[in-house]
Length: 279
Image 1 (spheres, one colour):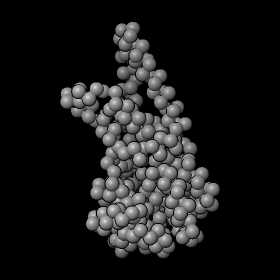
Image 2 (spheres, helix red, strand yellow):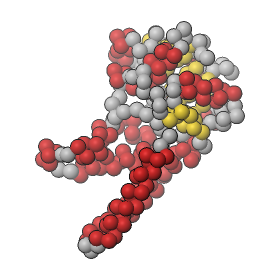
Image 3 (cartoon, helix red, strand yellow):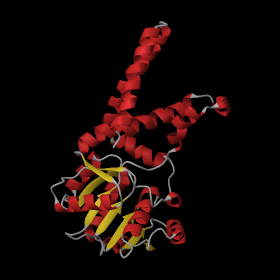
Image 4 (cartoon, rainbow, N blue to C red):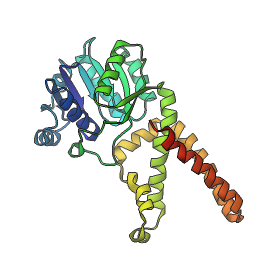
């Protein structure tokens, strides 16, 4: 499918992509771009890619596929930086969690013919190449936000399916609206919960609290970009969430047991749909 791919951002997502790709396509070569000498040494030690280099031109030229596995605004920055080294056949994909700002940058740079927007819905609160996992993308859902009629997009769909991910197509604006509820809002809730609970209570936490707190350890350098790039959608989802919190608060203040039960039953029904309709 691809003879050589270049990965820019060989962390958890990019490193896992390399391992998964190498397992499926052992004859292909994977190059990894290292932004500094420490990253170069780490990639050589971990052996996640076939070759690690600080030469961006070497990574891009001669690669059939470029994978941008970076925070949102670094993806946009590297789209500009790699453009001079690309040719008409080069395919570029990103693994970013928001899509509108990236697609706008692609249009400004006239890279629509080369670019395929991708968002694999998997990952971890951990970051870094040392956590790369060849099975990360198996049984995951990957949303593609580019036109499914284009041949390069169909090729990327086949690639994700070869990595055992299920592919779904969404327009970038609709993707960002959905993900603001399913991913970005839960992270804000988790960050806020971690801050709201007095530290002296932590020694008593039950398993349910630990489950809700897990993503609060996610790195700020990734989530800063996600929150800012999708801020309008996130504010809307936050407002809807705050309205429901106010309903609970009001019912508690009024000792309104029927209202509390109604709110819980409504939530029960929607939560059950998760298991009935899960992809």
